[in-house]
Picture (cartoon, rainbow, N blue to C red):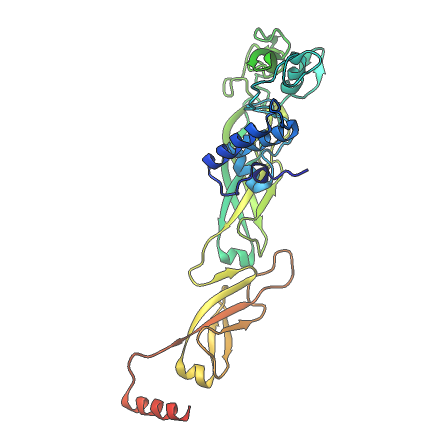
Length: 367
């Protein structure tokens, strides 16, 4: 199945928000199931694509990872597979789509979320979300590798209650808001008619009961905004834009559930002297006319500060590229390195002495 959302909407990856909206409206009108030549499958596909590309955060995640959410599946928080769909013309038992059974039951299944149902009580706890951040490194650190300490803010388990959300010896009572079920029902209206959406109770966080003595620091949530610190190992030869995944270093989960992951995108800073070309390094070197004509041997400073000898062949031209093999950057994951490419420019003096001028005129006649 083609999962290229840009292709589904027929827009370029650099398309603006207005371009995406116009493309969506055109295709939605064309494939709407109530139309004579409508196509239910295509209509759902373009809606799915639009929900991702019209949201800045989801679009950024999709562009980077090829998907709009790391956790996969449907989310009952702020969206899901039908979020934002145009259901005009859909109805139960009339024109458009016909469904057998109770639409309330169908949507309860879709929006109710997962988790174990114990005696009618949902005990679903959300794992922590993934986090993406950037890390700037120098070209020298690409050459040798590095270890960086990264500090960032995210949701962490409350230290005062160890993530429980209540004091250690607290007694419990049934939650008034959900009557002990751990979930609440909300009536929603759409072109289908009215249906029930089930979500986790916000008061007891899906537990069905509340501690009489909630944690004062996290107010019963079990998590607070805090600082995390992690050491990132940068392997030699890493490319700019490359992602490093640190498992369980993302947002802490609710009430002891699994933490999310941390994704660190590498940003290699521009160097003042060297230019990177994959595993190769490019440096510009100026030589005299005499060295270009007669040949010479000059000194070049490498990225790590070592002095290298470079032979200039006689007859070297302006713009020629000379190569020092294996003196570039390591190839990521390999034991070999790229090359140091020296781009030659020839220095032309503005003024010369009379004797030099005579010599050059004699040389001109010889040439």
